[in-house]
Length: 199
Image 1 (cartoon, rainbow, N blue to C red):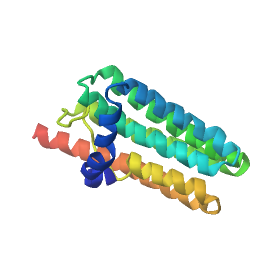
Image 2 (cartoon, helix red, strand yellow):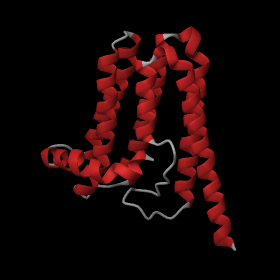
Image 3 (spheres, rainbow, N blue to C red):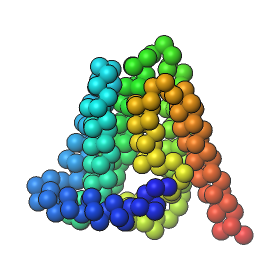
């Protein structure tokens, strides 16, 4: 949701200057891999209670994830392989975050982390299903269907879960409910649009 309203400003001030710096010596694939490696570090850093470093790696991973697609388009190197790697890396980072949050307190957080992962799985599945069956009219490699909880909102929740451990239960439940709502509403809009086309 935030991306829908603020992406142009974010692109202009934080992405395009970086593209000019790295476009000659980095490929989009390498940036995607770097995003994955930064996300990987979140898990052990949280396990060792290094929340500041974990936050830095999480934000770096998210930032690089927004750079790689723009870099690929700038270099005219967009490809199905790149899009697939990007999606896979996003899920990998989310898994690392969940494992990191779980590892802080496995006894009390196991069920909630499983519920959050399940909600993410449902939401991503709805996103991909709609993307497969909807004609692409965006700058991305496939149809992008916006929702209430997207990557920016998810990262905000991840940061809250890292920094507000005493409110972990309520934040985790709120996140899961909103992510599931995003999946259900996306599928509802998809079915509604398909019925309209068939009429």
